[in-house]
Image (cartoon, rainbow, N blue to C red; front, side, top):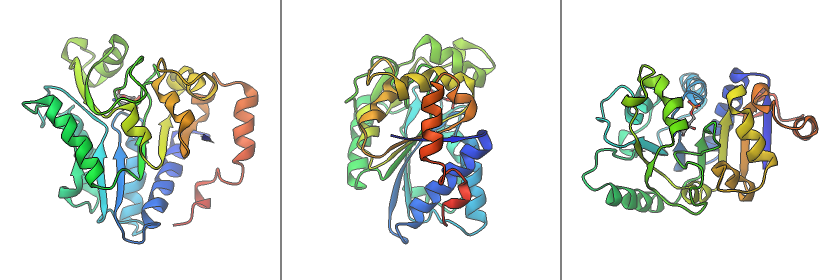
Amino acid sequence: MRVIIQPDTQGVARWAARYIAARINGKNGGRFVIGLPTGSTPVETYKELIKLHKAGKVSFANVVTFNMDEYAGLPADHPQSYRTFMWRNFFDHIDINPQNVNLLDGNAPDAETECTSYEEKIAAAGGIDLFLGGIGSDGHVAFNEPFSSMTSRTRVKSLTAETIAANSRFFGGDVAKVPKLALTVGVGTVMDAREVVILATGHGKARALHHVIEGAYSHVWTASALQTHPRGMIVCDDAATYELRVGTARYFLDIEKDNLDPATIAL
Ligand code: GLP
């Protein structure tokens, strides 16, 4: 696993956005399939990608997207639905073909069929080239809460009290307003991507990063599945490394020293 440590949130956003843009450009106009997260962490990365797009450095015309997850039962146009989030924070500002945008329908009459057909759609698109993710403070990836199967596929999951409490900040601080269920890609779905990039910023993610990077491969911290991925990477800020051993952080800073400046990623 690669770990790219940046001084701050802005550094994470700039580095990750340039990396993704370079990957898209590497297809020379061919189709690029990307898995995308919501949450507060990726917002700055989306802003940087929008900037790169507006500067003519990257086009999303041939990019196909699959979002990771969606709350169950929240109206699609609810301000906190992940569908609303994605259009507001990203898709509305780039040249993506709306037909290339795939989002789980949290109001599908048959959630199980919705999840199965999502997996089929990913397969039909040729699989995911790069899955971008965030991480929960309990180490979850997408909505794969602790003890989710490391080979899980897209399905309905119940959210833990910790996640509901964390996400209540988007619902006026009222835990009662946070949906209790979500549709989410599985850990296996994420790990099937040809490359996985996880973003983590702030002290609140330090404990999770310690377990995911230095701990055992374990369904307790589902993002630790990244340890077995041939192309897994964490892009984090300094604050998120506070629970890593000094030696671990120094190791990654040293081994990546020539790659840390976002400007080294050619576009
Ligand atoms: C939710 C999402 C995850 C996200 C996590 C962290 O649980 N399902 O995909 O990684 O929140 O969110 P934030 O980036 O706001 O800390």
